[in-house]
Amino acid sequence: MKNTEASANPNSTHDAGSPTSAASPGGRVKTLVILGASGDLTGRLLLPGVARLIASGRAPGLQLVGAGSDDWSPAQWQERLSGSFADAFSLESDSSSEGREELQRVQEGSSYHQLDVTAKGALGEFLATVEGPVALYFALPPAVSQKACETLLAKELPPGTRLVMEKPFGSSAESARALNATLAKLVPEDHIHRVDHFLGKSTVLNIMGLRFANRLLEHSWNSEHIEKVEIIFDESLTLENRARYYDHAGAGRDMIQSHLLQIMAIMAMEPPATLEANDVRSNIAAVMRASTIGPHGSTDFVSHTRRARYTAGTIGDRQVPDYLSEDGVDPANDTETLAEVEVYVNNWRWAGVPFILRSGKALGRTRKEAVVTFKPVPHLPLGFKGTDSPTRMHIGFGPESLTLDLDVIGPGDLFTLDRVQLESELGSDPLLPYGEVLDGVLSEDPLLSVRGDTAEECWRIVEPAFAAWKAATVPMEEYPAGSTGPETWTTSGD
Ligand code: NDP
Image 1 (tube, rainbow, N blue to C red):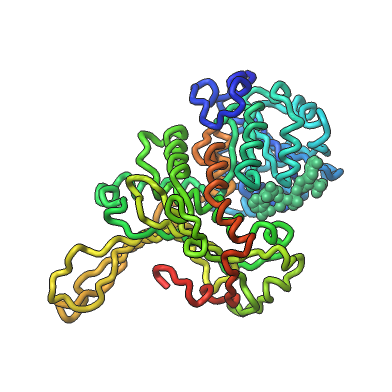
Image 2: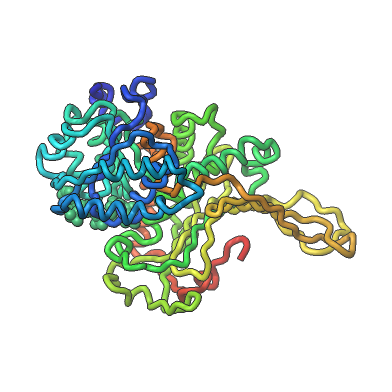
């Protein structure tokens, strides 16, 4: 089954939509091929995610093949698998004995192949030896992935091949568009999985379940009732020896351009008719198309964005050096470690409501949540005392949770308002984030994968602000490691 549809329309970034294009002849991916098998992502995140998925019984009959430019012996590959699978083997609660047997089978049957994926014909010849349908995971440096795709031909791909692309997807709207065009020559859009491991199934479905299954919320989910939405991913982790990547990305490219915009779109999207990939991804794309930093037409990035960098400080009992003195950091890159942007979704539902996206490293506490602040009531009867605070809803991402802050009459004086918090856990998946992503890939469901047009739009939204940062129009502020950020930066709940 070759992709004539994609060849006929190489620029199409929309779901192919036809039932035959979404399913391979076998109905499920048979072989997962990891390119970049010796790399950091594969060892630390991807293989442990695969292992938990296999051990949970959700990837029956899967074969695993690794490929990389290193000349690894079979024993070296087995050693890597043993290291990365150890956690899944030891998890009694998640892995039944059948799950562990299946994991053992996959490990013993797995092989490693030395391969320069950028050499003309090499990847295509290799794929001819692999049983399809194949999921081809590009765990490679972005430039190498791009070159590998350029050397591939559609006719070299086994029927039903899925291409799995890591972030960053391009480095600008233009380069994302070019990469999309290359991929569209190979497979249909719904066979391309642009991975965003923050788009775990539980995160997406928890937000959608809350919004669309509760009339109370859906009714008030608009600019008439909501003052602002904050999406916050603060972490206490510092650079952790990742200067080679992070010093070129910074908090803006690492987090806001991809993960936080995706979560924003799920918070802001119109109700989809179904939970099918086509419906959900089209509504996500519509939000992205409507979004700008600052209100539509604004070029005031000083008012609508902020950036800062950590200086020496203490996190717990850990002494953290100044970011600029960390190994591998080049001060000339002028990299921010904390960023905040105010996005406006310029449509009927959200006119005038800021979506504040913030993420940073080396902060005093880990905080991963969306905070929805509702507008004040039109009139509070005179006579109430105490603090009149806005209704707030917090959706926590890891642990998945819901907290609703309400004003009620507290204990004691019956005229005095007091704050209560109604709390609940939300559903979560025992799979690791990469296990959740791979579950979608292997079951051939692109629901959690970023669609091509959305990947381009994400760059289009942030590019003008990043240009202003590069030109130093927006000042670089500082905060001591272990603090909550620069003193003047406050968020709801601080
Ligand atoms: P690494 O540099 O650790 O690994 C890259 C891998 O690519 C190595 O196995 C390398 O093999 C292989 N490789 C390079 N050139 C070739 C080639 N021509 N042919 C075959 N294999 C080649 O990178 P990471 O694992 O950190 O990152 C991989 C991707 O994942 C990147 O796109 C990154 O942005 C993304 N990512 C990484 C995360 C992380 O935490 N590491 C998190 C999220 C995304 P060899 O060593 O033999 O050259």
